[in-house]
Length: 164
Image (cartoon, rainbow, N blue to C red; front, side, top):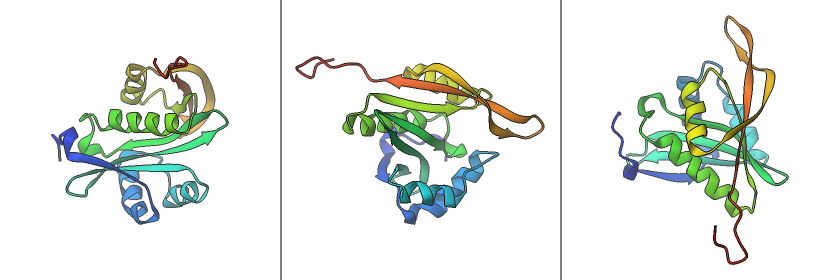
């Protein structure tokens, strides 16, 4: 389904009813996917899950967010391979920011594989900066383990009148 228009999608909170579809997209998109149980545990523990759907109902992508102290940790952001490069990842990032700001948090933290160049570029274009590296963080086929880049997006400060 290439050519999905951004106006042809909507966001909903992720629920248990979404998890079979989420797990399918996760397996399509990643060599080392989260399991359905990982998503179940996230929802059970009060993390925020968001599903993006096409108006036809097809799952386009999703993200999972965990509040930690004064910032949101973006644990998983995935766009179905058939609709990548249509702006869906950017839309999910914007939704993550909306949720985090709505909770009064200061920013968003994430880990990403350095080999996932499209994701790294998306995050950098959005304004995330690399603040560190976690050694041997991800499993990797034929190379043992892969490091993770730790990236942060800090929300602009507002003045006393709510103006940035």
